Each structure stands twice: as structure tokens, then as C-alpha cells.
Image (tube, rainbow, N blue to C red; front, top):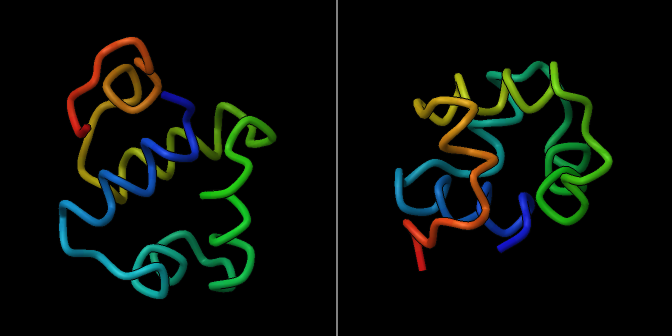
Length: 70
């Protein structure tokens, strides 16, 4: 699973909206939506912030080999 899909699935499973996560990250909803589509373009620092907002660890967020949310 790629990062973008994993981020979206974790967010949805937590019941968070894109608007909520975007607000916590201090970005627009459109910018956050782009992260969910192309997370591979995100910096490690951005991924750390996303993991914090989604209340998961960075290793959990980026461990795409494990299918925790499929």
C-alpha cells in the first residue's frame, strides 16, 4: 500500500475529515487533499506531522508492507 492510501484510510478510520486534519497541519484542505493523493512527494517532516495529527507513530504510518487498514 502506498503512503497516500494509508494516510487516507487511517484518517477515515479515525473519523477525521480532511478539513480537520488540514486545520491541525495549518494547511488548506486542498493542500491536504493533495497529500492524500501524492504522499510520496511529502517530506519526512510533513509525514511526521501527519502521523502526529492522525495519532499514530511515523513507523506505523509509513510501514506500507503491513496491511493494518485494508
